[in-house]
Amino acid sequence: MLYEPQNPSTPRKPFLWREFADEWVKPMLKILFIVLLVNLFLPRYYVEGRSMEPNFHERDMLLTSAIDVMTDSLQRGAVVVLSSPVDGIMVLKRIIGMPGDTVEIRDGTVYINGVALDEPYINERPNYSGEWTLGADEYFVLGDNRNRSYDSADYGPVPRANIRGAVRLRYFPFTDVEVFPTP
Image (cartoon, rainbow, N blue to C red; front, side, top):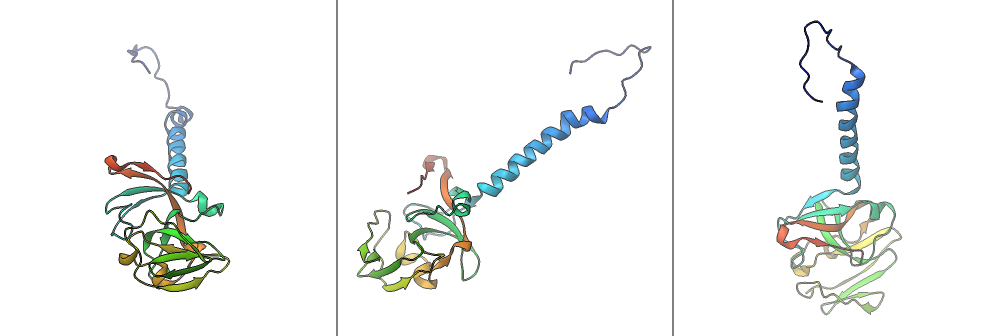
């Protein structure tokens, strides 16, 4: 709006709520709606700990997609944020076993339904063993830093309801920005 000097003889324009709503309230509601949608479907998380090294480090900032969980399109190899079944703390892990799988760890190798899993992303081979059979709605998750991670090898399979989202983007630090497509 441009400045127009008022002539004292010209009556002042009355304050109109409709103009105020059109110029201020509606744009603010649109911005609020967009922010709510982004936070609902694309939550952001901050990495703490070293259980996912060498791929994720302390202070990495991540954008996740809750849509993958809602549409049941999680896949083996996806890095996910989940609520720990032990204490409810949000943790970052990689999906290794899918519903109905049998996961076995022996001699430093992970086997899925009897087939060795190729894992170029791990820090070191696991020095523990065990076997787990997953239910219809359970996932087996492990940290990439296998021997320094508290994960499904310790507390067992995780229900799908605990998974909050799949990691889609590391946006900080800026030198390590990376997009993570569906595996």
